Length: 115
Image (cartoon, rainbow, N blue to C red; front, side, top):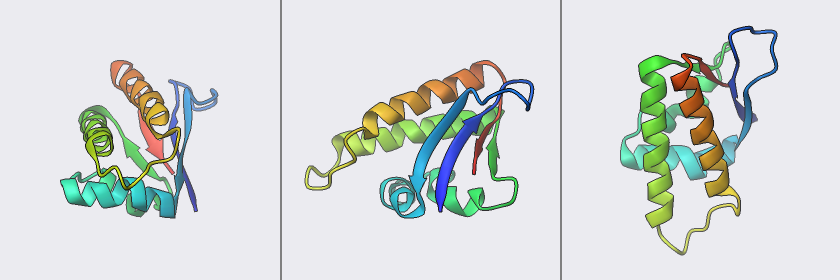
């Protein structure tokens, strides 16, 4: 199964402000959830489990700030991580794009959905 992150504006009929392909379940487990469990990051460690609900995983306000902080810790883990374990070529560029989207959602009081 593939997972995406979406941020919509005030009107649900608008095109998403962010439509970010997070990855397949296997990719998310390797690069996100396994690290989330190691670092005790509650949102990241359960991304696929929570996103599999019919409405997906919806984050806003304080939970969105927590998610941004967790993504920062995830990025630091991979930046400082084991050089024998590689990350996809565009991993850090994609993390930066995601961080920009999360910050935009926080600044504008929007919700982020992972589905």
